[in-house]
Image (cartoon, rainbow, N blue to C red; front, side):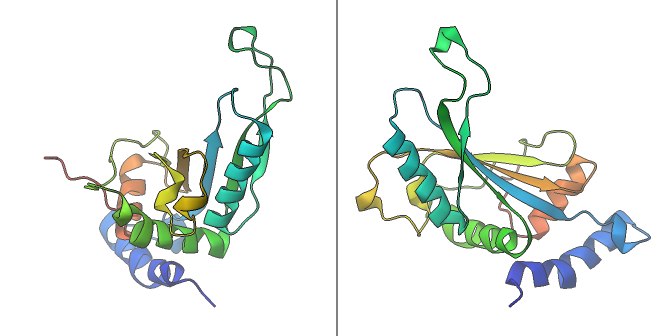
Length: 182
């Protein structure tokens, strides 16, 4: 079964982008390549907490999270090489579209006093990053079973070459960006 957002991209978003940006080929139209979810914990967390957070990340995305380890030792932070410090999930294909659909239509409206996501978090080459303060805004997570609330970073990687193209792509796909006067 094809995700709703993927169908929307093919039927409405891509033709609209071809029209507004003046692309001559369908291959020039920017598309969403992948979505990366990342969380990092401080060193005073134990392994069970990190495992629970990785399990929560897996419930949110429908894909098992990879535990990331420190690449270098940093004595000022009392960090040793190889110590688990975070978790990461990379979504592509249908899971990516399904996750974005749930994020835009279910999760973001559940945030208290939500007025849109900042429009200035593009990296200069067409990728957008945003952060969430806690994992309990996702409906897949039972707030009663969460021992530690923790935030996460979400990065939308697009094939756009400019930030304006990526912003138009994401806004046509439903991302609720803040307007200029807020």
